[in-house]
Image (cartoon, rainbow, N blue to C red):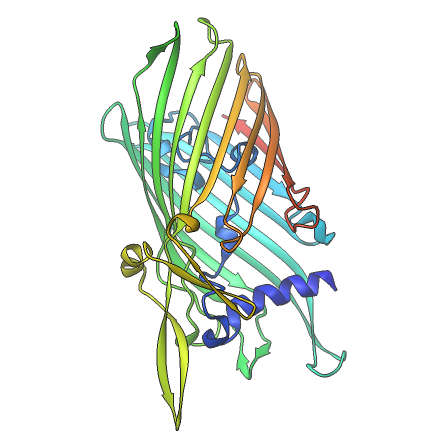
Length: 381
């Protein structure tokens, strides 16, 4: 029953007529926003200004510009552990490869499995059919250096979403949704500087991800925007001793959804109804800086621009590049996602092998993300 309720929520957000959605569901395919990197997830969902491993494909593809090694990584998480559903899981496979004279290229595959679902009659528990729900994305990335301190990067991503394919909602057949998206990114890394007698580095990054046409499951009138996300971050990397055996990184990311749906009045016979239609992705980049209305039950709440920002802060300590501990905090406004939690994690590196894990401690015990664990395995070659 819990799994059915979970899927029902996803289907309602993505498939019901736009007039019923109002602005509660701004975007479709929210799985693209799941932070796949256990390291960044343990640091309060920060990474756009760090981006120094294969996970840069998610956080900031411009980070590939400063990387000259080869690496592959896989992350696994039993997603939304509080629902206690065995076949609800998330996997992320990523790799990068350095090409002499060209730069570093990367590829990733993201997969969210929602498991087997059951469709029943609206007025009875009779089973009509069973179907599997899943979403996946495949992408290629490239980063290059403008100079010693500035890197630029981009990604191209193919998206496929099969939530309830073959079923019908409000007498409309549900089909798989597909779309494409691009990322545009930059990363600045300072030269080493002296701070209290030891060496430090400062970096700042910017990533506009998932910019592209919307996705639809029924017809064009039901098109929903992709979760276009603008993420900005800063980080300070500091050696605690002259030899660099003990090192700490402090980072902060601020992000905002850059997608909107606008209200349009439609004449239907003698009556007028309000529909909410997707604003073009480029236009939304400029119109997303105003207040945003949210329908919370029967209440309409207006969010200011500041209330639309999502904030993460985190820290990481490394000993001799062998062992690390991490922690962080993530915050969203109660009417803009309401994710508030503390994160923890650790990492281990032995020769070419590495492993990271992260843990979410939500401030609400019954939150769907409570007790979420992620495990990442890395291999350098």
